[in-house]
Length: 434
View (cartoon, rainbow, N blue to C red):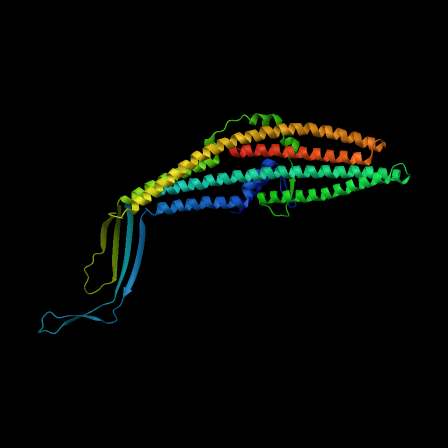
């Protein structure tokens, strides 16, 4: 057992290039998904559901296999006697009741029961249903991990931009203060910079809290403790593949490959089995048995044989319409499931088109914001240089700084929306773990 555990640990260390060192995980987005599939606590419950369905299948099968039971008993009449008078002129004959003790072995075997055979098929379908549900849970967890991974990267990038901006303004503030002291610039210029620096410092603190919140959400989905450090190896630029994303907008959609659709189709077969199971209640049940009794303490008068073999048949005759009502209910459930499948097909088709549209729009917005951020950066750097030369006022610089930060924020938002739209499309197609 210890050897198996050691092999498992070595495998995990080799599989994840991001290893645990001093309570720290270093993960790419793919490694984060795989790690969550292994340790996410919600998925642990899904795995238990699959194991439970396996045991339910074994229980159903065992119900039709030979059933063996054994009993032993001891009886003592406490000295009582049986009194028999064969002639009224003769005294009664008394027969003492001797203590008795028996050992009985009974074997039962189900020979025919339609519900049993249908029940086995139903139990197998429930097992398949639980496995499909587990796949669905894995896809949902992978999608959530991927999206939160992106959110952490965006939050880190946003924080870095704010810190860099604060540093730049602090440098400008430090250069401006001596010029104000010697009267080369007005104090209002310095005050405007001071306000902008204070505003950005508060924004940095807020961004730090948002980053910690995003990291905590990722920790929760990975199934690690709140003290575990996370280092994400993928970068935003590395995750942005414009050509691949553009090609994905033209992908076709096979509804039959969707996990939710597959789940509903299994549910349809289950409903069909329920109809058959209710119809099977009209059929008889036949079972056989064998009984062996060994007399440990025999009575004085014993006529019971030690071996008995028998058959028993139970025939349903009349139920006042109860069985028919149950069949009709099962048929209604089946039709409801069929209607839900048709509705799901329409919903998935519309959702696919909408996600394609979202991805295309996100890609177009990303390209626009990418150009805007380049222009805004050039404008800010130009105005910053002019301010240092005393050509423009502090108000114009702080306005340019706010415009630049807004452009950075819009750009990061477009990146996140693009990656999110791609992730949602992969989730719908069921290939997020491929």
